[in-house]
Length: 127
Image (cartoon, rainbow, N blue to C red; front, side):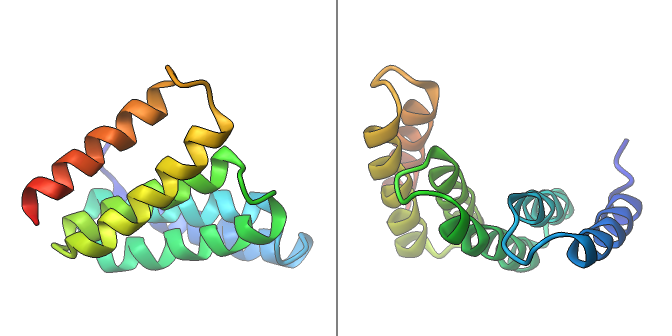
């Protein structure tokens, strides 16, 4: 519906409640940070989106095994932030981290592997 400010306010309020009732590294908190990041992406506020996505990744690094596909999703999202901010070498680094994890944890024909391969190709064209 495009009501990003309202969505952001509700997500942030929900996050504050969740922070009271959940342990600090619960995956639900990572999901809230990721969702807040998605709202900022839609608002074109990539530095704020990056901050939220990085917080989500930090929680996932603690809560998940090192080759979990969820980590790769976060690295891919962070790569997207850097790409949109014109920081192509940082984007490439995060895309490559995502690719490494997805190649270890998903079947070779999985669409996420194709996605990150495309993202790597896009960023290399900009460098």
